[in-house]
Image 1 (cartoon, each protein chain N blue to C red):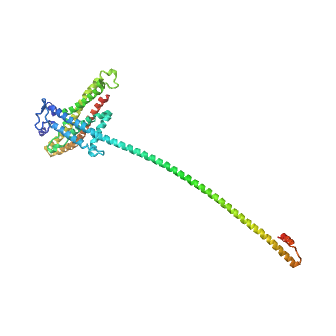
Image 2: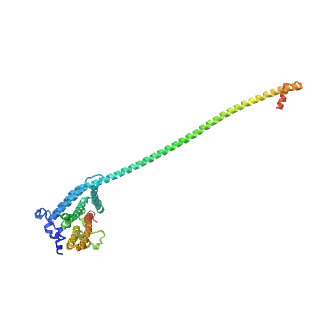
Image 3: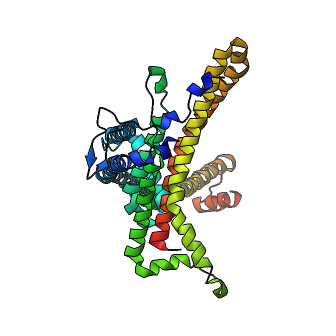
Length: 161
Length: 261
């Protein structure tokens, strides 16, 4: 077993070179390079965490913005609906008022026309009486030869009519 | 079976000085640049290359950067799960430990025999794993006494110890505590050595049975070879698991030092 057989001859060289090489590994690689590698990893982890945080914040802001926008839109919609209803009500009122006015005007005209007709009719009726009385008196004179006063004729006609 | 004596499954663990450096010494201690040291340096180069290629530090990582970040993240998770938020400070150490052992174990499994060379697994030497184990144990001691002072000794008296057992439990705890560096170092060394011996023994079966004749080659060589394929896959798994176990145990011991019980 060379490990034991050569122990006396080689232990100092083994220990010396082991300390030298492992010392190099520890001081140059372990202390010199490993912290740099780790700092790179840490920087990356931090960057990822920061980016995630930023993305989360952005998402929350977008949500808030959307909620805001939705509320505003709902408000605008409600306002528009209210205006529409108001306009409709106003339009209906206007129309009613106009209709009433027109109705009244028509009624007036109708009444006036009826009055004219009535006067015309009564006037015509009066004229017809007079003509009929004249005609009756004429007929009586011609048939009976009797003179009938126009008043009597008128009375008779009125009774008949 | 005279030939089987030629294939020594332990020979692969022999340490040989390279490039005529066997006379190098500091203060009388030999520090020859051996094949073991060469593979340590190779592990460092591979590990450095792996991490350096993952250092583009881009916001959106490429494949290589992703691989390196996965490894650091893995060690980071291991420590934060076992030690808590204070475990972050130990990431450089445990990462170095885990990746260095992993690189050593995997490089040692390279099939360089195909190209006339030999991979050397320095984690199969307890002189190498012992250094790492003692380093981990020292860190536990230093951190423990630094943070808790003599209160660190309360580690040897677990919560809920009955008073009439106070003469025994601290002794058992002390032994289990002192055994830690050995369990760390020996586990890795034994696991790596056993796997490599197994592969070597099986390959000697293949070679010797084929040399003994076609019948033997088919009867023993082919099943042995198929078994080697499976064991090689298992060894890759063991290479990762042993590195993980070393890092996991170190983080558990650090947890004891940081948080006591």
